[in-house]
Amino acid sequence: VKPLESEDLIKEYEENIGYTFPNEYKEVVKNYNGARPEFKEFKSKQGRRKKARVFEFLFSFNKYDKWSIWGLNNWKGDMRDWNIDGKIENMVGFAGDPFGNLICFDKTNGHIVFVDHETLNIEPVADSFTEFINSLRKS
Image (cartoon, rainbow, N blue to C red; front, side, top):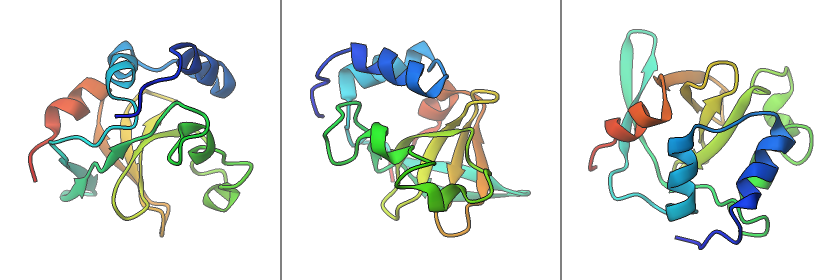
C-alpha cells in the first residue's frame, strides 16, 4: 500500500477525465492505494468462454508514483498507441496484471473490462466494481 497523499487527488482525477468513480472503488483507494491484493484471480469473457486473469496491483492516485493512474490513462499522450482508433478512449484503467494488460472501468456504463495490451481486445469482466471485487479468488 502506498499512503494516499490526499483524498482530493481522487476528485481532481475524476474532474480531469469526466467520470465519477463508484463510492466502493474510492473507499478501496483510500485504504489500499497502490496495493497488491491477496485474492487475485478473476475471469474475463471471450465470447462464450471464460478466461482466468490476474489482478496484480491497484494503480496509485499519487501523481509521482511509478504506477500512477495519472500517466497510465493518458490516451492522447504517452499511451496514444493504445488508442489509435479511439477504441479505448472510454476506458479508465484502475489496475494492471503481471503482463502489462489493464483492468478498466468502462465510462459509458460503469462495467469492469479487461484490455489486452497486444490486441486491444476488450473483454467483459463484471457489471460493477463490487461484483468484480466479490469475484476475486485466491490463485
